Image (tube, rainbow, N blue to C red; front, side):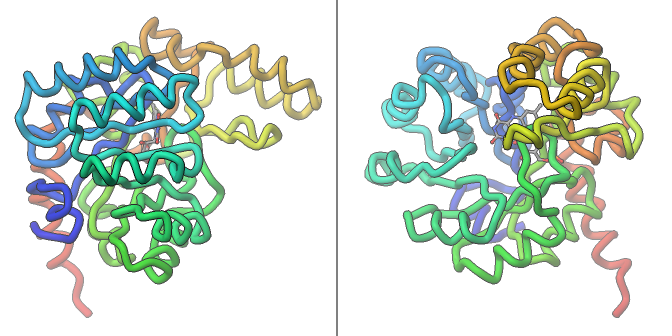
Length: 310
Ligand SMILES: Cc1cc2nc3c(=O)[nH]c(=O)nc-3n(C[C@H](O)[C@H](O)[C@H](O)COP(=O)(O)O)c2cc1C
């Protein structure tokens, strides 16, 4: 399947595994790329040397392109921004802000840049700054979110910019995939479904929690702090939401979630850890290989598309 996104990225299928802090390591990202989509290593707050070593590990698994997702608020941001240039990474996605400062350096190095945006205004700003594509991410997503839904954000972004748009948030099967194209996207980015991929190294209890989730099991914490995060309901989110109602200080809220994603992903503490996952978790019911996930979506997409009679 060919779109402007598959052409720009040099991939077979317009399916992207979004960068995910603690979750998206070399193994997951490389296996998504090997299956014909493209995986992104999640740099999150990791030091540059960790990112370099994951890029190199990914290259041992596949010679297909693998991207790096750069979190712009990282304390190691300058170092990570440089590592992707040194390692000749072909594409970076960016989250948590405006990558303007690094744009020239990356573009000069021939790196394609695709920022995650949660509004039309940011999408336009990114296009003007030289982004090759934008990822329009709706608030159905797992992790840090904006306030617009995928259904409303994607067509408005697609109308506002002329660079290609990738849809993210709430997509986990061929129906979501086809819908994204109808909204004007030229690829999809998925997170939650890939968390439970066989090649994902997250703790089994984390995967089990996603597999057991119902449609209403995700909640948003942190709206009061201006940094909303979607994760699955547990003891931590219950305490957090109560504390938000009681207007406790930002520091106390921070204290509750400090290291909490790592706790869930690495230690399997799904009670007090942050089990980041999107609203679509309720539909993710089994562990499959990256290849099975991508093949199933692409095969079913033809049936879904042909089932609509206008
Ligand atoms: C566990 C988890 C961690 C995430 N971490 C990041 C991150 O570090 N950077 C980022 O840009 N997006 C992050 N995301 C968002 C994903 O890249 C992706 O856009 C999102 O999951 C898509 O929505 P979905 O979960 O409904 O598939 C994360 C998502 C999850 C589920």
